[in-house]
Image (cartoon, rainbow, N blue to C red; front, side, top):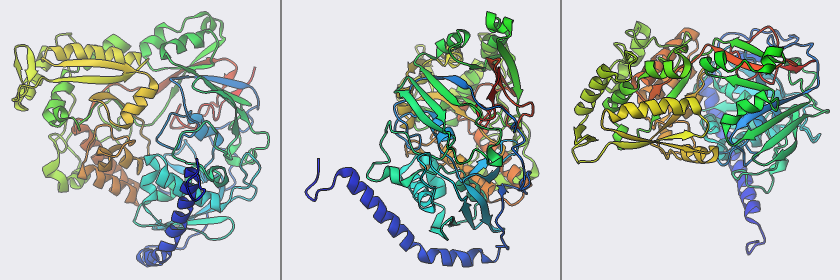
Length: 623
C-alpha cells in the first residue's frame, strides 16, 4: 500500500537512510581534521601492508603461498553434509531478528581481510590487497583488489564498503555497533581505497573493520535491512545458495566464477563443490543420523560417550574415522548464568550459595566419567588466565586497585570454586550455602526458603531442546536445591523460542556459552558491557554493569605491548570470575570428531584447533 506521496514504507526508509548517510559524512568533514591533530604526535610514517597483527608483525611474508594450516595441493570437489540442531527462518545473519544459517556469513560473504587461525590475531588481505595505518592506529585505510567481484559478476566497490559499514553499524546486530560508534569519519580516498578515522585510541579497530562483512548495496535498495528475509545476500565468497527448504535444509554450491579462487590466502581452502546443512528439530537424533550415514561429521563433547558409543559397524570397518584434535585456545565459559536483572540474583552471596550447591564433582562423574576438568576462570587453558585462585600479581593488582571498593571478595586475594566430596548429599556444601543465604536474608520456613517479605525462592531454568548433557547436569542441580528449600523448574523450548527469549533476557537462569580467543577485545563490550543491561540482543545475559570490567576492556584494546594486554586480560578474568555470574561446567583441551573416511584435513593443525576457519574451510574430499 502506498502513502499519499506515492512512496512505499520500504522506499521511504531507504531514502531516509541515504539522507542520513549524506548527513553523516557532511557532519564529519571537520572531525577528521581535528582528530588528525590529536593523533599527529603519535602517528608514524605508514606504508600499506599485506597484513596486520594485533601485536608485532604478521608471521607470513607478502609472498606467502598459503596459510600454514591449509594444504595448497588439496584436491577440489566432492560434497560434505552437516547436521544442525533447530531450524532457520531467515537468510540474513547480520540482524537481531530471526535465526539464519551461520554458513551464509562464513561461506557466501567475504570481508576486507581474512584471519589466520594459526596466530592469536593476525589478518591478511582478502577483498583488500593492502591495509594502511599509523603507529597510533588512529585511522585505517583499505585498498580493494582489482577484480574483486560479487557472485552476480558486479564489482565490489568502495561504495559497497561504506554502505555495509554504516548499515551494519546502525541497523545490524548489536555486535557491529561498538566499533561503528568509534568511527569519526569514513571516506572514499580514491576509486579503490576507503579510509576510516577513529574517535579514540583503540588498537584493535583496524582489525575489527577488516573483518566486517561486505554486502552489495544495490541488492538492498528499497528494502528494510532490519527484517528477516529468505532472499540470500549477494556476497563475494566462494559459495552461493543453491537450494533450500526453509527451516529444514540448505545447500551451498561453489561459485565456478569465484573471483578469489587463486589468492594465496584462499589456496587450499574451500575445496568442496557442495556444502549442505540439514536441520533437526530434535538434536538427540543427530547422532543416529550420523550412524546411518545421512550426515558426514559428528562432534562429541562428552568423553564418556566418545569412549562408549563409537563402536558401531562403520567405525569398526574403518568407514568412519575417530579423530582427536588438540587446541591452545582459552576454555571460555560454559555454565548456568544468573540473570542479575532478577532481584533474587542481585546479591552475590545468593549466587555464591547456588554455585556452592552445584555439586560439580557428582555432575562431572555422572555425565562424563569425571574426565573433563572444570572451568575455573573465563580464560582457563591459556596465558590469559588470571590464576584466580592465587593472589593477584603486582601488575594485575595495580590495574584492579582503582576499583577496589567495588570488587567482590576474592578479586585481589584469590578465589577458588567450591569442591564437594562427590557424594549426593554434599552436606558441607549445603551447610555453607545455607549460611550464605541466611546472610543474604533468606531463611527456611516450613521447608521453603523465603525472604523477609515471605516470598518463596523459586525460579525457572531455561534450556534448549536437545541439550542432553546440560539438562542432565541441571536436573542434578535442581535436586540439590531442594535441600535448600528452593524450587527450581526446568523449561525446555525449541531453538526459535530459545533465541527469542534470550535475546530479550526473558529468563531467570539459562546456559551461557562464550568461546574466547587468544586476543579478546572489543567483542567483550558486547558480552559484558553495561549497555547490555537493558539493550536487547547483546550477549550480556547476566545483566552485569561493571566499571572495572569496562575500564579493563578499554585498557586491553589500547595496549601497545602484549605484556600490558595480558595483565589487563588477567585482571578482567578475576573480575568476571569473582563476579559469580556463572556456575561453570567443564571444558576440554581436545575436540573429538568422527567423520567419514573420505574427508581429510591437513596434518598441520592451527593453534585454535577445531574452531572457526577449520571445518569445512581447510578440509577436502578424497576417496
